Every structure is written in structure tokens, then in C-alpha cells.
Image (cartoon, rainbow, N blue to C red; front, side, top):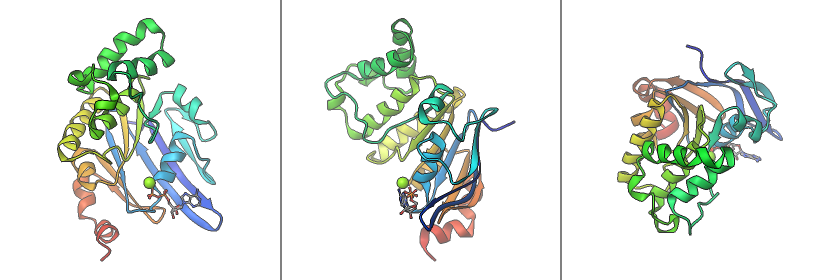
Amino acid sequence: MQSLLEVDDVSVTFGAHKALDGVHITASQGHITGLIGPNGAGKSTLFDVVCGLRRPSSGSVRLGDENITRLGPAQRAKRGMARTFQGLELFGRLSVRDNLLVAAEMSRGRRQAGKLVDGVIESAQLEKYADRLADSLPTGVGRQVEVARALTTRPDIILLDEPAAGQDAEETERFAGILRKVAADGVAILLVEHDMELVMNVCDVVHVLDLGSIITSGPPDAVRQHSAVLDAYLGT
Ligand code: ADP
Ligand code: MG
């Protein structure tokens, strides 16, 4: 099966510093693809390249059959790419449902939005929070609503940058279940995450980035055994 997303031989330089050096990663529909690596490895830079916020110095990004390297974020969104925005807050005085409706009505018509939102609330398992004001949610649930909001655009691929930050162990567990459900619906998920346990727990494939290069890619069990991964994380 051809991957939905392919980042090929991407490099990004900041002055003399090479933040990414010949990076190759892929993500497929129905799969959760993890991207891990220590602080400063280049995860956020790669995330920005994938969503169109940063042009690579060289290399390409393909989505489906199309080379999207030169497209901006809005054009990528139109082609089925969604992401969560760190710090783009929910409307605190609106309910969870209304937060999703606002987002859905921007990308769909008003008529379709209600139905769509009901479906998203169900797949994100947020039924019991639907009528709560966003202000009143625990931080971790708020992060889950942000993911649900991105799902209202009906994306083929969703990009998540450190979504588990601020979630406690129980919320992270619930969140893992939500990600599995979303992937099972056929969405490709690219999960950039510091929480190695979450990544190892939910991902089908994991790419490990260190100092701007992919040091290994594969299923979690294989990646976990890789000596370079142990070195990158434990500094041995
Ligand atoms: P991560 O998300 O894995 O922690 P980043 O992608 O944020 O890593 O950063 C990778 C490297 O690129 C780091 O050395 C960082 O200091 C550098 N870097 C990131 N953004 C910029 C920028 N806008 N200008 C200069 N250097 C940057
Ligand atoms: Mg980062």
C-alpha cells in the first residue's frame, strides 16, 4: 500500500545549523505513526514542514499523488490535512459542542455541521462533556476537545504536536483509546510526542529523530530495542 504522506530527503537549515538533515518519514491511512526524539531533535521543525508552516531547504513532501512541498497550510488543509494548534484556545464560555460547531460551520455548511459534530463527539468519546463549558474542563480533556475540533474538518490525516502534554496518566490512557478509534475510522495520524510510553503504546510505526536525522524507523517493539534509541534517551 502506498503511504498517504511521504516526507523525502528533507533538510532544514537555520543559518549554519542543520535542524533536519535528509529526513525520510511516511504515514499511512488507518495507522498511527509516531515521531519521537529528545529535546532539540527537530520534531517541531519537521512538524512545521509537514503542515506547510516551513519550507524545507531541500527535499519534498507528498500527500497522496500530489507534491505539496510548495503549498501553504491553508492549501494543505483543503487537501485533507488537519492539525491541532498549541495555544489556540477553545472558546471558554461556549460548550464543547458549540466549540466544535463553530469549527465545523467554517469548513461545512450550517446544515451539515450539526450531524458532523455529533459524529465527532461520539468518535472522540466526549459525550459526557458535550454540554460542559470549555472553561470548566480539566486540562487533559481540553486537549482532547482540541483534537475533536480538528476532526470536524473530516481530515484524511491529522497532525498532533505533543498532545499528551498536560494530560495525567488516566487522561493519557483515554486519549490513547481515542486515537485508536480515529485511526480505525481510516484517518492517518502523525503523532509528535515527548511521552515515549504513549507512543510505544499506540503507534503502528515509530520514527526516531535525533540531532536532525532519523536514526531508526519501525514497529514499537523493534524501535525500543534499538541501541541508538537507548543512547538518545538515556545518554549512554
Ligand atoms: P524539538 O521539537 O525536537 O525539540 P525543534 O524542531 O524545536 O526540536 O528544534 C530543532 C533544532 O533547531 C534545535 O537545535 C533548535 O534550537 C533549532 N531551531 C528550531 N527552530 C529554530 C529557529 N526558528 N531558528 C533557529 N534555530 C531553530
Ligand atoms: Mg518541539
